[in-house]
Length: 341
Image (spheres, helix red, strand yellow):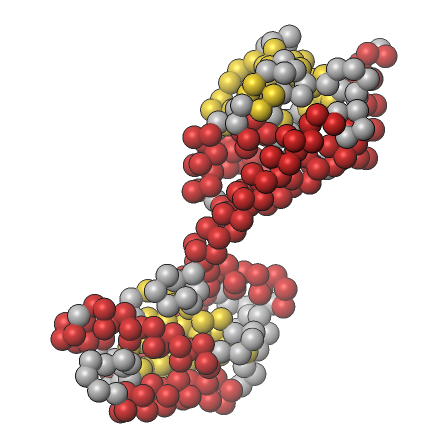
């Protein structure tokens, strides 16, 4: 009986000192999808203290005991908990514990190849996991530093690797949210921003503008795609100048842009929309060949927080379609009730 209760008591002591080594449901689902499954039986040794290892493990079923030797407290890990992450992140890292399977189960193994797949598949999620792993490693090491000074070099190497990886992941995450040509948010970044706003302020008082370049195909056909790219960059600059600190400017794709703005009334939305079309028109009249900007058509509407993106887009798109049909270089408004085209 004492032996059965001892692991739980020791775990309670450890949990006070360090974050739980558990994956979130979202992390576990991704790691399980990418990693390699491995069935294990009680008594099976996964590795011994001092072994060089490059594999990280996640427990899907069953449990694993980690024995650090000497007078250090042992741990029993269960489903969705992970261990061996330093071997994955550093490579050929000397294991600090014996890992022994304590009940029949299933593990998920992740090596360098799977880690690279995780980086590509979901950099945001992996960045959150790595930050937590850093905290876990740091707190563990602080409690052991008096007795295990030889591990300081490993810790510094791990932290340097984790910081570099986290920095790379942060940059990768930013790239996945940003349109490379214009520097505005791309469609994915725009929707992530909307989700964040909805969680924080429920989207009160917003207007949506859909912006489209007039006769953009002619610009590409007559002057080439490099000139077309400069025109798109010029449109992005106008949107940046029109956007306030709480607004979101986005290139949806091709020559289609959108701007979500803080607005309480139709007048607030139209004031920004007309600034955009008037600015583009003035620059268009001043330019010489090849063109640096195009005139713009804008569809505008107010955003209802109770509706979804597809509803907002349909309203603004109906207005944009009318603006294009009427010759472009203008703003058209659409109320909540879609009028027949």
